[in-house]
Image (cartoon, rainbow, N blue to C red; front, side, top):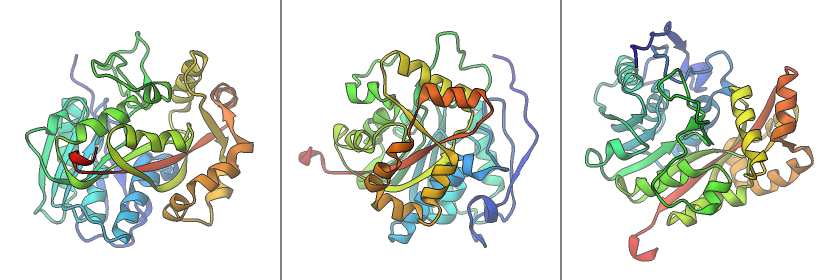
Length: 328
């Protein structure tokens, strides 16, 4: 693998991107440097960005509940924006972060360090598979956030080439429940299993899962991995990388997975416009039912994308609380 070409610096405003008027622990203007492997933040379209539209509302919901995370970890940090959000919103002081590639991790560490006002934050990073890089380095974590990819990659795809944040290597040695395999949430399940290495009892894993499958199936993940689960927040986003992502879901739908569903952006915008993500989380099953008439299959969504149309999907934050082993 050659040396990745560094991209131009991306500037992000917490006021616009995090909807935080005044920050105290991170800079008011965030400069980010990325490699070719890094997930590019959607600075010009926050509604299409996972950190801005999904992670930040979930962190705010926890903080509103009085739940902070002095010890925080994130899986697949990319540019490091999720870490900066946790430091500001969840008041995190010890932070673990992982990503698949060494160069992404190097840039993320620099991005985090360079944009902290409060330098009393300990950073523990590691490159590798899911939470494995943090095992033995970090323990008693309060909150883990993960936004892992769903789509098993094609055999022709090379992880070393470019940015592949929407796919993962399908060959796993672990036993995977059919529920997770059928719904393309294998890595979310494995993250819950691996989290036991670093998460304290009573700590929680926030799994950011695109609601292209029923909420009942998402909730079942927690129980299958030995946690108590609930929906913390429910929101929506414009589908990013639509050709690759929707195309990937359409392919696996033809192979018998899913089914998967998307929605017109206008319907999602109208449905969620007067309700906060936390309020929507409490009413998630009800809202899902109202959206059923507008579901679009992955194949039909791909046809719209190929015509230049935007499609969206709902997103649930699955809040999985670790229970004592004796209770499992």
